[in-house]
Image 1 (cartoon, protein in one colour):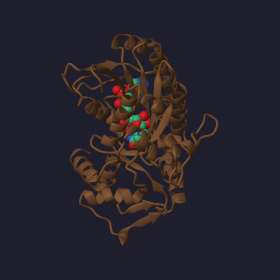
Image 2 (cartoon, protein in one colour):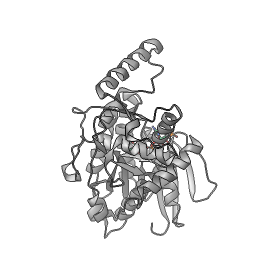
Image 3 (cartoon, protein in one colour):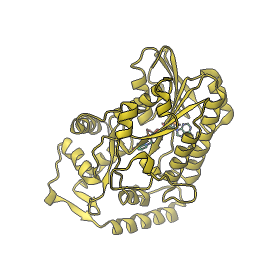
Image 4 (cartoon, protein in one colour):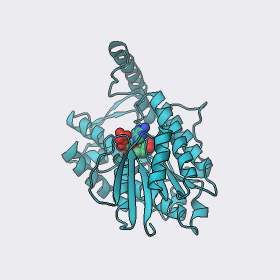
Length: 346
Ligand SMILES: NC(=O)c1ccc[n+]([C@@H]2O[C@H](COP(=O)([O-])OP(=O)(O)OC[C@H]3O[C@@H](n4cnc5c(N)ncnc54)[C@H](OP(=O)(O)O)[C@@H]3O)[C@@H](O)[C@H]2O)c1
């Protein structure tokens, strides 16, 4: 970043947001303001400030922009994909609108980068480019989480203009140190000795991204938006970011198990039909709903199983060409580092 750049990171205490903050800190001239409902103070460095705020609170968000006057906003906030539809709509759609309005009204704010998701897009099995990608809409979608991520993705692209440059970073499943979702689930499966099971035929490919590279992509985009020479090519654009190695979901999971010292031979794999898992997951959700009146939800969720029926296959050529993004040089090494962390911490 250039001299004295102020960056506001929403969700900066979360998994991805935390890595973005660490990466931003590598530049001594950058100051970072973390905004989330309960930000975790992890550093006493004067260059970092913590601000408790719900992004849907318009008055509070406007006051924060008046106080921080950020040059760039990196917006990573989202509820978990299994959260209630009302929370997803309020946070991802209304919250993103609130941030965009505040960013546009703040004279100093020139760049706005949003974290989108593979869940926002119709699945593909051949390398997809951004110009061919189809976002879900409020009237055509499969899962509420994906719909809200898609609507926010489109809102951020459309908000691009002379007073604010915007960009969207689209990510698949993220793995890496401090993960609270994906790797903990793999470790839990390993400890319950469920790691030799797979759901479905494991034919559809998915993208994955190492968290430090996902973080770097956001910073490349925000830097470019603040650079008058680079900004025109980036402003109003969406970028696919991944490790660039599409592969079947359980192939990736088994690489993680092997890195944790528990390799699975092909002949040891037990397959559960996808259709059967969908029925089991739906039944489980109904039983939990009836007996807990919606207070608890099962670990096995229908939308998680539906996700396995989707898949993603992306071209990252646009990000390489325009942002200068390079995926992780050695995915096996990144998996090893991630699983070493996960086995010690999950
Ligand atoms: N993890 C993945 O595999 C993955 C894949 C694709 C895309 N993404 C996207 O990447 C982004 C980051 O994901 P993550 O896995 O890092 O999630 P995360 O660890 O749960 O971080 C999200 C943060 O958002 C904050 N937050 C939630 N609701 C808020 C609200 N109303 N106002 C203010 N802050 C709020 C939470 O902090 P507080 O509790 O303190 O508010 C939380 O720390 C999300 O946009 C997600 O959709 C993630």
